[in-house]
Structures are given as structure tokens and as C-alpha cells.
Image (tube, rainbow, N blue to C red; front, side, top):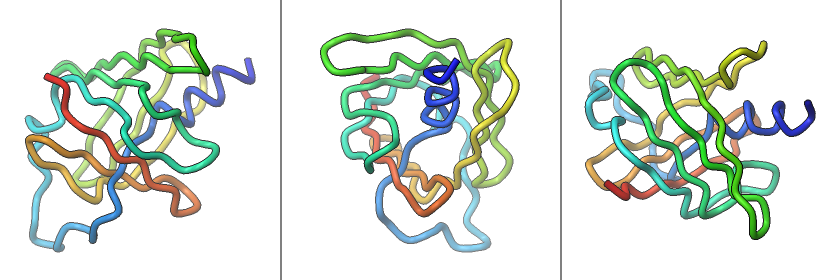
Length: 123
């Protein structure tokens, strides 16, 4: 259960230390779709090498890297403006993040406590 909580927390993951989007700048939800690899993290967040794959139907898959092993988690997500919320399927509790940067190649989000996660598009 503790691992699921960490995953739910980490599942709501990802960010690159860049400025927040301007108030009139919209996040294009289509840019979120695809496979993203964590390339930079903060302690206590998702480990580098973990991946998130976001699909257009509000589902995602987290392949969480833990040392030299990987564990798969099915997620559901919502995107409301720059606010990304993820939750491990069939569990309670969710993870909320603020997207700081989203391009066709980079995704950066900030989690509670100011921790950022940077991801790079894999496909």
C-alpha cells in the first residue's frame, strides 16, 4: 500500500524548471499525449528512467523504475488548464501537479512542495 501511495504521488509527476505559462497561454492537451521519460527529478519523486504514457481517453500508464526493477501502474488523469491530476486506478487519493512547460519534446511539472520533474518525449 505504501508503494501505491508513492506511485500515486509520483504518478502525478513531471516538470522542468522553467517559468509558469503566462495567464493567457493555454496548455494544448494534445501535446501531453504520448510516452514521456523522467530525465530529472527531485528526491522523493519518481525515479529517473520511469515513464508515463498518456492516452487521449484520460488513461495513462506509469512504468515506475525502482533501482534496477520496473513496476507498471494503470492511472487515470485529468488536465484542467495547467493543472494535471493523476490517480492509480482502483485506489483512493490523487496527485496534483502544475504543468510549467509543455512542448512537443519537453514536459515539466511542479508537485506540492515545489518539487519539479522533467520529462522528455520518447514517442
